[in-house]
Length: 565
Image 1 (cartoon, rainbow, N blue to C red):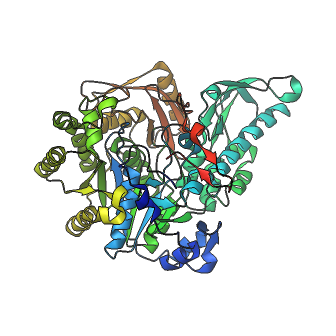
Image 2 (image 1 turned 60 degrees about the vertical axis):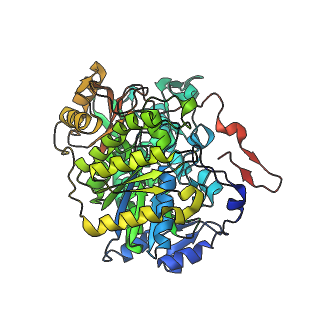
């Protein structure tokens, strides 16, 4: 029996024991409107949906897109994914045809500190253990394709190096879907001439791979192959760029990804369809599920709830600038998730006292809520605030948040979806439906793609993060010049930044002012179609905590996997 997600409200064991048995996935698919030949089952409760299913529905009008985001992440937990799932369940209870479109969990957080990404309590997608581990193998396929390209590069150099690749300027690393700090900087090719050419390299976590981003942004096989061919792998001795297509690698990479590009279908605990596909992190990648899955969900549902990683300054901003730019998708409303516990921490309360009522701290922490409301309004979206209620939240604290939202003119509702499932999200669902009936989005990006790279970053830092400006290290200056020489200056920026603060300094809570963003390097992801801008001390290969969750994972005699969340 899966436990609630870390930091979520607690649920009595007897309540979870009464949860319904999953419906056969073919039944879920048929109810969503899919034909049997469009569904490829992976066992009894998971399936892939063919790309032909989307093509057949090209003329079908889209449903409404509800974008779920949150205030800045804290150890207290905000419950964004849980609220998103609970909202889908609540819409179902209100008689609406609703679906979720979510990202796949990475095994890095599953075995690290964050835990799974399937919700908690009575607001979950199932089968949770399978989704949290290997699922349908998509993330493994991304890792295999990525490392195949790395192997082809080293093999090309070993067998004569016809392209004249400079081993010192290979920019394509290797990846692994496990947090492993020991692999952040490595030397490959040791052991003599039969083992290749020694050179420095690195490992990233698989979900930070450019191939993961490509999988999530591609609109089909042809686009996938074209994007894979555009991947920059390094430079020649004379400084000329070399791409994956120069090795002829795009066909093989696409073959490895041929199944992974198909969206996955599972279900919520209450039986609604959930499209779970793609898993880029929002602190080091673009943080949103695949365009294909979202489009498919919009064709078969009247309401689709999607979410972006972490807060509005990360996943949401990257959806609005990157995903929107490549797909044209615009959310009809944004749901901003907050919790009293998290607001206490943004008001200065220590982690050890985050569960202790403290109205003064909540009042101080409201600055972070205000900042994220401001971000979403700046993009021209109607906003509904969801207050995810935890056990021990005082009525005075909750009233303080409700009154504050009312004073700002922001619709809001309490959510108790972990404890009560869809029933605990009905007030939120009604608030969302009400604003959808009254308001239309007036969407506008914060910057335009054609602006100079520095200007885009300056605008993003000031308008979204609240910084006074941007400082560029000498390395970043060189990187920007190189991106301009590649003709990549017109791509959107994907800022890799800590999730623990609006700033690039994780210890700064609330909504700090009087600070400057430091960009330390810029990596051109030409296949994905954006520039990764590393800030602060963020890393593309996380490390494990002192006591990783992996130490509490086990398998019972009957083969049942036991996860500690």
